[in-house]
Length: 231
Image (cartoon, rainbow, N blue to C red; front, side):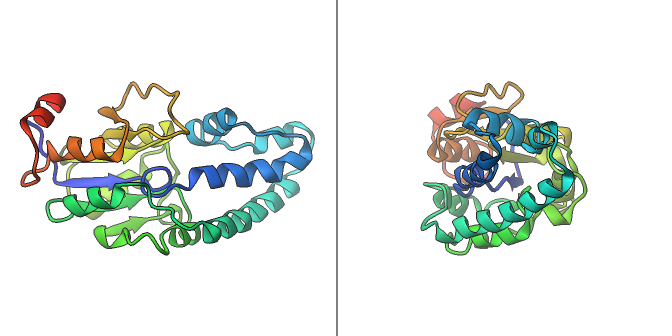
């Protein structure tokens, strides 16, 4: 039976419920330019292909100067909306992390920049569970490149075979797999339509995520039914 000694966590959409706010920030900035960004386009362009919506502006003949200005405006707008949000921690994720913490090493590998990451966790109480956090400034290429997860494994001091990643996006899944990690994907409203065929498994809730992880972490409580489900 596989056992794991470390878990590397994505942040947005996994630990904190921030992807809708990021979507709305992009949508509202693009709308004055005739681009009505849909949730499906956001998923495909931002969470799957990792090239954003700036290509649409450039295709309309706008210059790179406008793109850079809108990037800066988005940074400020997203930060404002994160500060205004009352509760960003995903339901049940705190219980999962608390149960894991005595048994495995854990780190965060996120594409979020440090400014947004810190704001999103200002009131979650989740960061005490992690040995380290890697934000976008701290590694080379962004997901789906494996750079962040490779650095995360170095920080854990563990082999990929002894760890798993937890993700919610196709590009995050590809990044984890490219680093040699098996990856558990958590469903949320943004990704419910996507198959995630290359995932180790796909779970529908954090309660189910806790059951899966318990089956592979020595010392965590689990039931025979849970073991049978995930062996």
